[in-house]
Length: 144
Image (tube, rainbow, N blue to C red):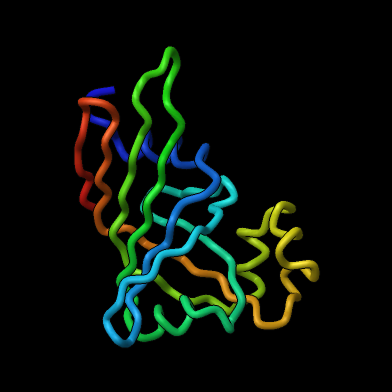
């Protein structure tokens, strides 16, 4: 698919459940961890993730909001190449239950048994500034 659009990438990213969220620690180290986007990718540039207030990534983001996301899609039909996506953006920590409800899916109940009422629940909104992708010999960048 030559020259992917933001809409093309959004559709493909919505089919990839897990990606890696990378943050920078106060000491300057880069730390990555798997996160589920629960199929919710609103690519006007936003991805949403839920975590616990005590998670290291929360303090990392509070100190430095610049983050990276990476996603790898399955290989295509007949062994076609997989899709690789790298997102550069800024993260926002959200603690508003009304916003939690907007982005909650039943799959999250596995991790947060009390749903949006789980004590210490935090939603991370990553707003992309730039997206790089590689899809076989097709590669490109979308600046937002």
